[in-house]
Image (cartoon, rainbow, N blue to C red; front, side, top):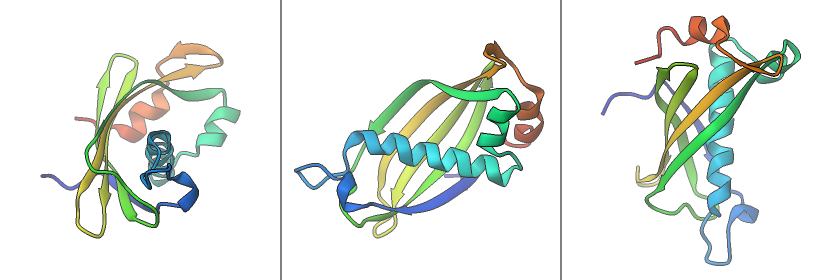
Length: 135
């Protein structure tokens, strides 16, 4: 398997777990999102500054395959394995991998579109910074 474009290490907090001791499924969305935001920082963009500039990247579709549950205090890395572009959509392929045993806990395909001043658009800034990352 190819090296990911980006990875970010996180740790499960106890309050993210359900009564079965597993991370509640909704928290995986947060893990994937924070990793995408950190990736943006790496390529020189700031999510909040983009908003102030009238550019809002918004999730339009999420598909997650849960494989192995994370539990309290697990450390894991969340990756951006690759990015695709389809019209005005950027499709992020992401994974969550537990550090203790390298188990893949979840895989996601997340579609993001951009609004420029409230209208669906294709801002050049993303094409420029993602140029070397898009497959």
